[in-house]
Amino acid sequence: MRNNTTRRDFLKTAAAAAAAVGASGMFAPAILRAQRQPVKIGHLIPQSGFLSPMGEYMINAAKLAVDEINAAGGVLGRQLQLVPEDDQNPGVAVQKATKLIQQEKVDALMGTVSSAVCLAVMEVADRSKMLLVNTGSNSDEIRGKRCNFYTFSVEGSNSQYVNTIGRYLIKQKQYKRWYFLTSDYAFGHDLLRVSRMLLKKMGGTEIGSELIPTGTMDFSSYLLKVRNLKPDVVFQNLAGTDQTNFMKQYAEFGLTMEVAGGLIDTLLMWPVGVGSITGSFPLLWWYDLPYDETKRFAAAFTKKYGKPPENQAWGDYYSTKAIAMAIQQAGTTDSKKVVEAMEKIKFDGGKGRQLYFRSWDHQLMQPMWVALGKKKDESKDQWDIWKIAGEVPDKNEDLEVIASTKEENACEMTRS
Image (cartoon, rainbow, N blue to C red):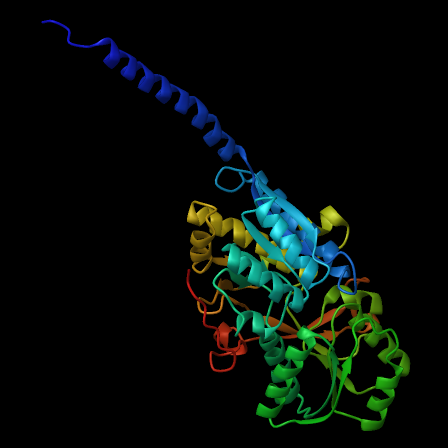
């Protein structure tokens, strides 16, 4: 049979074949490069200002988690990498988050301690459709009216903290006359709001309240008012190094009224010293809890850094693990699919129960503890400052009983 292929047909076929070979040569290395590139987490931490003491624990804990994940094979067969930035204040944090997303090409964001910073970064995450895990900010607004589909919170909410300590103070101790000292910014205002709600619900009385500028060094004028008013409880809604300065001066004044707090950070109480911490506080986590996972994490952190982890280290360590777990389960770094996976994961966070994110507001459901300051003769070393008085909720209660309800803090997120 005569071959009917013309020279023109031959040239077209040859050109197509050459193009196909060229394309495969061009795209194959790109695919391999993508497979070799690390999975990146942008880590926003306070490295300056009154919240900066937490930054060191945040980055050290996250690095430990990354080392463990990479030693076990990484995520989707790729190495996990942290890209840290100092979040400083809301304006700077927005710039840093944008840089992490647009220039560093991170696959997720995590961190923040200031609620004002978190609220600002949440808007960036929502616009960019980028997963954000809040590891240290407490305002109920983050999980409430300002919530969004891409933001999750491992850190406890103000409602969880206040409900934990409120149950103890009013139900067990019958302390009903409260005097409030509150940090004068978004976190403190929200914590005061939640504290007042609880006090009213429990039939207590507010006998005074003061808004304290952040970075206050001298609390003497406030402590003189406490001495005169004689409340059942001095309820401090303070943050950062203000917690340290207040507690030191309270001990120096020799006041004996019960001190409590909407929340407490262990690393800010260590400088106060064993025997000088008066009162009872809601604690997110403690390195001496009697659980195998707690002991493993605490031992690994102490071996690497020469001191035990505290509650902020707990938050960033398990946030890193949760992000890696969700990406692995999603089979991709696509944020929408990772968010959907985050809504389904459960994990052992060293709290003796399976923890999970509530689907409608993305708040981690978890127990907390009531901690009392130890006396010197009760402590084994400088780090051993807390005596655990109880777990809240009880083992037989649902984890959601200390969290805000939809009626109290409505979250209506657009799932897109």
